[in-house]
Length: 276
Image 1 (cartoon, rainbow, N blue to C red):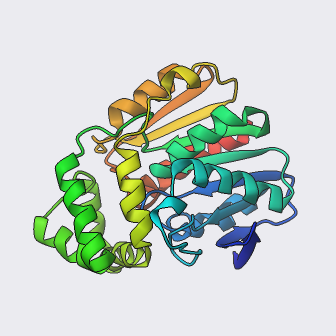
Image 2 (cartoon, one colour):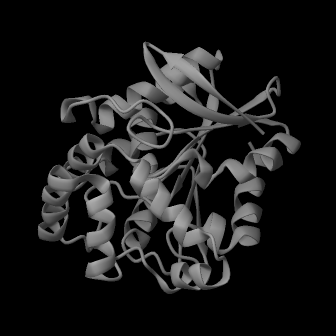
């Protein structure tokens, strides 16, 4: 695996990749407050299976650019970035993998540019506002970020206690992998304040895409952890709506099965990719 910076229309994006020159192309999108490192340890495995696999820090995340101003962050702008990255890489067609917020972006891309997709993988995501999210608590989070940045948010989150994504699988992982909690905290600290404020609001007000996805003619895989109650039902609805979609529920997993149940996750993803 290698890392580099891409200049995409004047926007610097941090990329991790493996398998450059391979005939098959896979682009991976992390979730809200995530980073390319959510998937970077799998890139060499994808490359060994014949894929040029790329994960990048979306704008406002990780080591990518953090444009100032909330107006520089929206699901549509993130979708435009996906198109720009694929163009920069010279990929006419590719598989797009989106996790959580990245899955929302992937859905928008699939609706707008289906001719560019060989396949679509959606994991732990929703086709509209996620279920069970406390809008008042998120609004309070925005005020905390505006006042003190993501460092203040992280402290407030720890004071509030477990959130909807803090499943038993997540807690088990923290108990058995000593560096995982710090890894998650560092992703929050690396996130742009403006990004957090703008996208946390839009994610809770986004329109329903299910009807548009019913027209999609792209092979798809929808994955969700059995404990991921925020996204479990909507992932089932996504799999039911997309005409050529497989549905995989990963047992004993929460929102991040690639960490929580890695062998089961890899088996599902690699089988889908090998069948394309």
